[in-house]
Image (cartoon, rainbow, N blue to C red; front, side, top):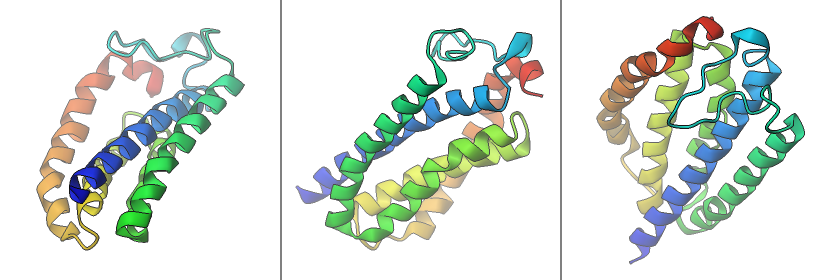
Length: 168
């Protein structure tokens, strides 16, 4: 059905923009100095992505091309979805694309966790717009907010603890 197609388009757009955000974060961490020198982030076993630039695996230019590529790929389903459900879908997608900039600004602080919680909420709202051009988005925020708080304020602290010294 059409709503199933919209759901898949929304899921694919969010997944591609999330890949873009992770790549952006790699570049931003390097650019602001979090992943330079001896105090760089600890590589996590489940991603292996920390320190790609500082470790000499990729150049800053390659990382920029990588996140630009993910962003362009994410625009394809986002534009199709926009044509199907209306322009309001672009609001949470644009705000979600900005999360990596806010995320890096305040590593291991309330600002950091709030940026991630906003990303969880925006992903849910994007999904709601994917299946309904006029969703009750306020209800969606109320439903997903506890999940965002648990993931961002509790789970993230445990994830970030091993390399907190490099991020402070």
